Length: 457
Image (cartoon, rainbow, N blue to C red; front, side):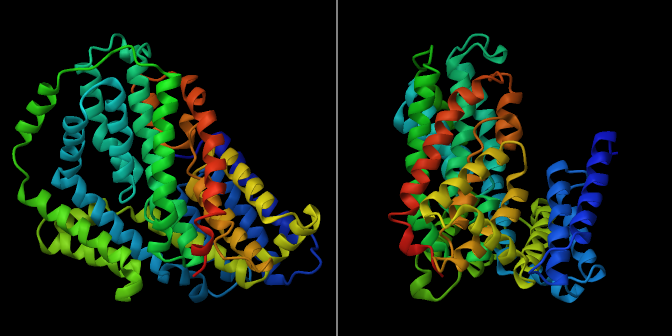
């Protein structure tokens, strides 16, 4: 069973603290808002401790709201009608099709064949292959697809004692793939769960996000490349290109499913980019792509059902429900007004920096999905209170939730990289600390320059 003694303490603590908040008088807030704050405390502790799966806590959030007087069950489940849910479903189907078609494998070997298999360029391919895939599919899926290829390349390069953590090249390859997948996910709204959360609350068009997300993502991946080369200078020079060419030969010419997948993915990207002219929204485009993959036989509906993360969708619906409860009852505004008074009306730049540092620190030990579910709605309320663009705080907070470069607990791909044995625990923060610092600074620069006009609905 998932319940252990330590987690039981967290569960009891979540109930006791929620009751304490519910019973303590809070001037300036109504009874429903007061109850919403107590539910927020309960959810935070439950999500941090993961006493039960995140989705189960979300189900509790749904049925408890009418019981404690926040809103009716009908209003509580309105989060499941949010269009972002259907963007997620379409995204899961697209990810499954890309995985099943074999297109990702061909992309990696093609890049290696074109750029050469020197140590520097191989690391570049490791970062950018997972990064470009992670813009459209879950970063864990992208990393898992390419990890066997990375292991094979490490062997081809003749790395010694790689699984004992003695090879700098092996370290940089697996960390590059992990960090690249995190950076690549920043490029689009469907790239990471925190991005989706920000998109759900801000309503920023898909193409708007891409305008600032792709430059941020590409620059960050280039920085990851250079930092890993500096921190872990490769001890090997390279392998023969003929080896990679042999791998491509084994794959043979592009198969039917690969061609169809490439066409549908390109078509979807075109529709997302031209949404302002076609009138199609990003949610419809994701479903169009998903349906086309099933119609063309790249995957079956049975396959799609198996690979859609229904637990994540239930979590999202519950998190959106909690967010709407905080917004509709005035609880979020009550919290934000107190914070503004305490801070003394600081500048938006300082607030952004504080929120990003807070998110970066917490996300190293807490699920970034759960963290964004807490911070994003509060960030949107703060922006409304200050009459600023709706995404001015929510977008950098969402991005900061994905700067998970410090610990294996920060992201599943970092844990998987550590699990290969190529990377020792101390190796992760050695490269991760400068990346986090640069990531925060770079995000603020992008958000307050090229992104600012696009942070509105």
